[in-house]
Length: 269
Image 1 (cartoon, rainbow, N blue to C red):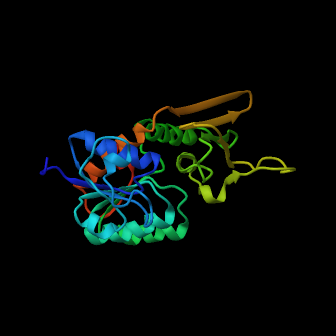
Image 2: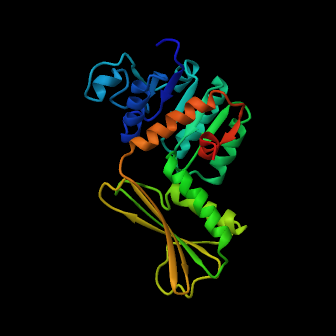
Image 3: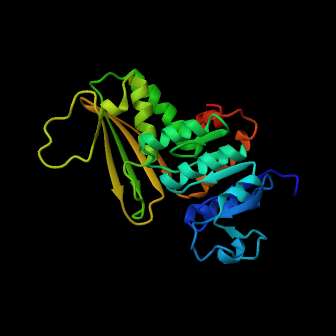
């Protein structure tokens, strides 16, 4: 087992963090060599397996990323924008692959990731699942085939605890539609409609967000024309698909040169 590549999981107490830790541990393809939480968290200093309600794993939860990253070939990070930017700089110092599933990143955050990618591979995606990335490819092709008389709406649904909207996946699908149309999403995006909004702008790409219950993730891309609609849909029922995709990305990234990549690169799509 000691010859397997080491991986660190950040934000390990969260639902996604625990799932990632379990996926790495059970994979037989990598070793979990670090588990990180924020300073002051009550898991820090304790065995991760015991914290998750199971048998001891021999991995102690830490709050200092630098020594953990120094032991790792890759870092898997589904946390928050400020933490992700900080982790990117440290992962770059350690020359560790940084797999990022964090959403809600601002333009300044993306600039920081670009700087870090000059020193190590960064793999970032709004969604790590195979199905969603195939969907994005289909959206791109359909948008290229249909003209601006077809309105495009991205409708997404997630659990009640999600803090950002539209979701990273919805934005990824909107970007795919914009690329297919040969336009910039930033200049053609409509979201948060309320009150007397007026008629829909020609060529706009609209977004609607639903939040409730424990919905894992549902995304519809609607192409609405005169007298007909085409709906492309992906439904996630198990968060394990994101953990499996993230582990696949981490293993793939270990053979790559410094730079920014996404799941299209990982999956060879």
